[in-house]
Image (cartoon, rainbow over all chains, first blue to last red; front, side, top):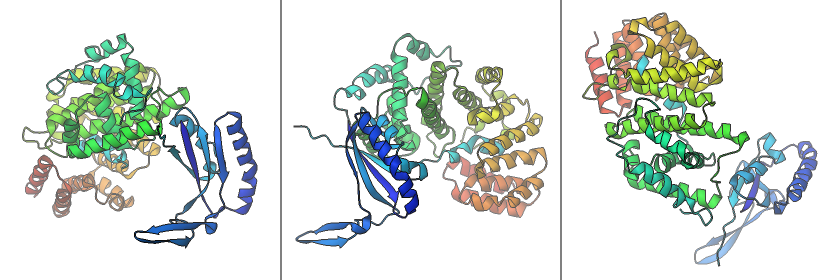
Length: 115
Length: 378
């Protein structure tokens, strides 16, 4: 099954912590590739760079500076994995470097559209 | 209220948190349903007596013969997958493993059948779409999963044991199912001491059921229960399980359920209320509290302390620990303190606590009981 692992993290993490963590993310990504489970994945620029398009019924859409909703944790990146089941996806998610300091991962199965 | 407490408080500690697979996962409606549900469902569950011992529970020995035992465990593990919240875990277990109908579950949990149906559909859809595996977890994850299974079983048992309504027929059934499944669990994993502890605990508690309420549903305090009504064969079975634990030199502090079973055992072995070993019970509660410093555990502990020392000393402990602030809205706090105040001769204060408990109590039998207590105050 394919899963999207959405990486949620505080955007106020100490710069130094982030830098020290970077090699761990590289290593984690390398292990995903080596295991042959990684279909893709990228980090995202932080929410101040976000632009939200919001539609209005019967009117032109509007643009908002920033994310759709302000939350304590913001989406910071994603991985797309191909693994047999949810337990395997959980296992990989639990190994992400930011989890060790309280970050979270939302696991969402990719909707399979059958032709 | 020692009985109500020591029986009831686990419930507050286990707070509720709030489709068909694509092939080859078509098992949910095919293999599992046909093999297990039909087998379980065909029996007359409601009229059936709880077998006195595990050996006489023919379903367990039947199961051991085939692969069905494996299937059952796989199904339990699926229903109790940690990616599901406690409520859907419990509903799924009762529906798919215990084989209760939606209407029976709804009656037992005082929910609308439609709500139960919707919750089950949501949970099944998640199982199917999220790819929750239909497998017994590997060694590394099994321990955690068994913990979840025990939690669900004990919640089910408590739901049956502590009635919030008058649906007693269905509720006793929940106790039976919880005990049956715990037997199954211990049959599969005889070395899993916490599960054995859970089974012993439920048996000790269920054995007291015949004496726990009057025919019109009023609770009878442990102090006033007719111990002759207790189910002795069930207590003996519990003793057997407990002795097995003792022979394994289990450190009590290891297991939450083992500790609970030890407390329930002390009550079961006391020939009269005044013969109760309160020293030992207080020690066990203190171990429980060290393991889980929860105000509800503290309340039960203080309740036991009132018999070891005095109601006055227990009331002082409540003050020192600011227990009321921690347990606002918990009716057993008020009914417990009411009893302590009554025993200490503080009738006026006791009345106000009983009245407060009354405003929080939905169960008709319990309400009549509290009204009696108020009427009998000096």
